[in-house]
Image (cartoon, rainbow, N blue to C red):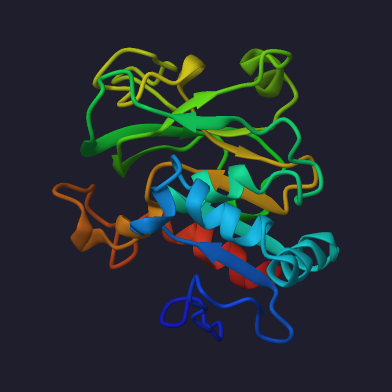
Length: 232
């Protein structure tokens, strides 16, 4: 965001209980460790939920109408566990162990679906490679919720596809076994988006083993980060 989108970025550690004044976007990355001690992303989420000051700070942030957020991989799991604080996130799933019962690190193909997600505007219909690296990425919806219903409501923003562009549950094209290939989801107003794959690992052409001629320096996933700058 700093280099390519011209945004001012502050780094907030997981132990902090406040956000910088005027924060518009909170992006929660993957790659943390202790945050998984109680399950996928639950350690970090509970350090917010059970800390009155941190809970109030995040609750106020999520309730503002001029804010938006992105959760990737561990950050996706963490935000899913904070859905009680996030307006319009009641339909979000929990993330559980991959069907393969192992950590999966690979390049997968995904399709960007037409959804309200502010970060994915103008990208619907794109089918692109993306990096995945997780052991607990399979979506599990509550017993009273249907994955197909989230898809029909246009709240699924990203799904795994096969080499023909069809949604897939087949391993390893779908690395975790998520139903209907679901791997990204948003809220009805599009302000909060979570996804298990890593777009930040493939936003530059040099991060791809192959690319069409004419891509230049930036890969298609850069559009997502530019969308963030436009909205902010």
